[in-house]
Length: 274
Ligand code: KIV
Image 1 (spheres, rainbow, N blue to C red):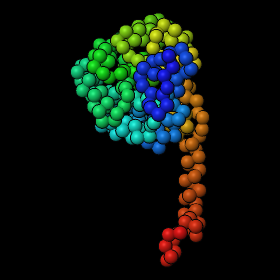
Image 2: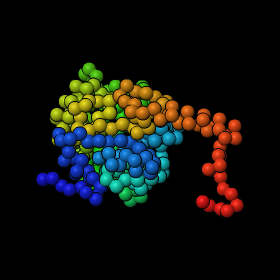
Image 3: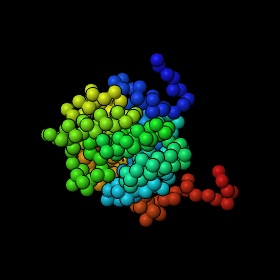
Image 4: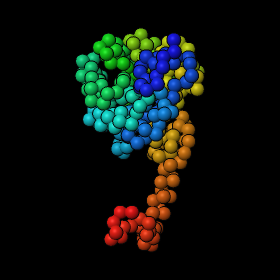
């Protein structure tokens, strides 16, 4: 059955129903103006905890707070009409107990009107995912390279290589069994991402995974060339806005110093507004 989504936001079941269909377009974003610009092209917009590194200059995602996620989540909500809004649970907000996870996830749902939350981790998070899903909170899972575990992994290393592939496959099966409506597969070998995609009935969303995943996600600042601290191989740069911004500011500075800005068309006379 095809469901019309005209004039309404996409829901987690709409995303699940896209398994094996047209690839699902996802981006991570953090502000209202960017959300407005990307909404017509996206099925799902994630407010990722990457916000800590991209927008706040943090060295990793571990210092991101619930308050930061609520503030950016609400901002993105105001910019979306169509795409499903998903918010990342930050490090320390869900791992202690399923009750802690519910309390914080419910806060996201109430204060940002997001449609779902995302949790990093596989088998270890299955019980929590089941608890949340059965209580009205749709969960997107995240397996493979889970950046909140950077210290356990010893860096942002590819996961699931060699014999370790079965660990990631088990994680993926466990989160599906627990009721997750989709799963992000990050930085893992292409053949493993294909196997997981073939095995699961829920959509896989790849980032550094495989073109055969059911959808793809990138951080909007990465693909626009605005965030240049890191450039992982999996990021395709579709623009060089960071470089352009630098050029614009250099030109502005030159104009200001030469008193070329403001020009007559930018100033007011005694007659007032024209
Ligand atoms: O934090 C983030 O932006 C993410 C995605 C890139 C998957 O988790």
